[in-house]
Length: 322
Ligand code: 13P
Ligand code: SF4
Image (cartoon, rainbow, N blue to C red; front, side):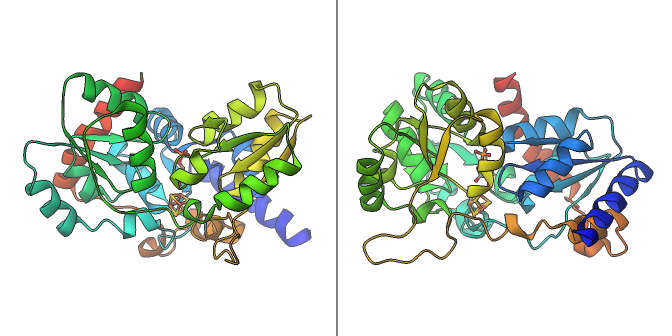
């Protein structure tokens, strides 16, 4: 409608005025993803967001996603201004892994290599030997396992168990989870598969093991989009945040995409396959971030010592991915 069109026009102008570029995650609302694309920004998974932001020449990055993504950008690009639509957009994995208790866990196992998921605070990254995202976690753990490293893994227990099962690696697990993916229901998914016998099931590995077991492809957001594009099936049942359907349908226009069930066994969903924090990235919030009248609401700052400690495991991942 009119108000939205006006807001988009204002954002486009502000992006130019402030030498800023919009970097959005696949889980943000379709209109935000479309705006990022239209304005020369990027829509991608968390690994690619980090790389794109680091390599882009703009002075300011506006990160439509959740706080750890903004922090990662600041760690990689300290000289850029990093703005977020709201600093209240967090992540249950980050919230469930406070630095004090995580650090004690690491201290108790000094012979273990500490591998943390990107969905963590700068402080937790600074305590780690390696940072990984879901698109490269398997390869990095395989690499460490081939060197006979014992590992501490945090914070996502579902992703950790999936990787441990795939690699046979020795991993001590932190017990965190993503509130969105944790709600996918295996029983209801089995029923849905019966209704669509030719459908392939695509699952993000933050989902419970019982759901991952039913998958035809398991992977990060970008890997799942690729699977929908390249697999022969005409129908896909997709277990991840529903924000992904926008780009997945573009990548596979002739395919029938169905959301995996989040309720079952009489349970009702709370997040219903959409991250409440990703949903905070609205047009108005982007506008006010770009105006940045109140940096305490929008701007990411990371203490310099912490930043340098967090940069090492992040760079290790990016070098490995290169
Ligand atoms: P990826 O985009 O790296 O698959 O991460 C998923 C996620 O949960 C981000 O919040
Ligand atoms: Fe965190 Fe899950 Fe939301 Fe991703 S979808 S930001 S892992 S709570």
